[in-house]
Amino acid sequence: MLITENLLKQAISSNGSYSYKQMKLMGLSVPPKKGWQKKLVGLEITMEAAAELVGLKDKHLGSKLKFKTHKDIIREYESTINILNEEIQALTEENETLRALNSMR
Image (cartoon, rainbow, N blue to C red; front, side):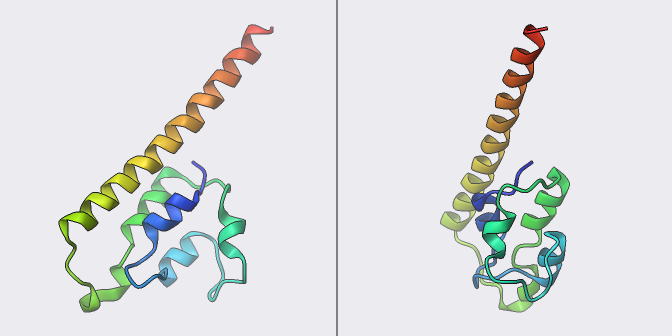
């Protein structure tokens, strides 16, 4: 799947940062170079790596982590659905392109 701005928003912590593990998972140096987010958008990432990236959200905050409200949980759920819908759309478009190419043979 492709790294999207939505995926990056889904993975960012409550304090607006990413953990060391997340940075390394995205292939970044720590600290990252200026403009790193724009360079990442559109690059390939496995579904497993994307899931791990989002799963690591807030893990580095430990006891500083606040309890999530129902609105926070719903927002995260909706964001995850949006990420999956983007991936489905991209795969559908790719599939349609391949079908069109195959029909030309």
